[in-house]
Image (tube, rainbow, N blue to C red; front, side):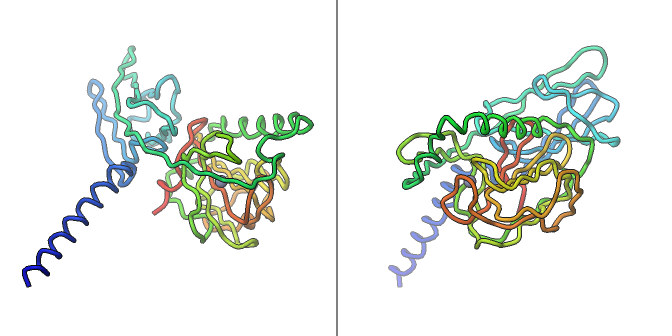
Length: 286
Ligand SMILES: [Zn+2]
């Protein structure tokens, strides 16, 4: 009897330890609120104050606001978006101009611990592309970069995100990748393994900015614009069912899961950016 009780206690103790560990390595869990006051102007913030996190803010629509040096677009009722990349420093600087001067306040951004992912057996040309492909790769990267710089005045980003495909998460945001033994850039997407042909759905209302069948790295690729600098990329698609300029609603089919480009099997690689800051898509969905 006593032994059972002790076991039960030990078990509960272990559970508590596991929860503490989980929260420590995942500071991303849970949205937080933060209220700041600049002179008499209030700023309300809510979201993930963590590397890879997105935060929605609200303030007086008539007053200028910026993160670091970036002037932020506001909706007519004063909502705005800020985001923190994978390697964002501990402090972000949010500035407001209530009168003539900019006033700056620090915001703490939590650090994350990223996984290391080792992938072997990739075709050599996919790990280190042959020189003959350089021009093509540079051109493709330029188009992607251009789209990530767009600051649209559409307000779709303030709605809720759904997962774009049903499947198993096989790769997480930020992991360091070692391909065939060569350390590469971190993986900025969430990989979702699903059978070839599985429908890929727009996670939120969006405007299509890219609809390509065959990019070197990402194969069939769609880029969606959600407004206020937030864009997302859907890669390795076997089918692309939209065209540039289309407006798609949440849940609308945009393409199909595939394994085109640099890919080892059918999956969707889903990436989200706030301009050039890489965000963790998993933080945007439940
Ligand atoms: Zn991926």
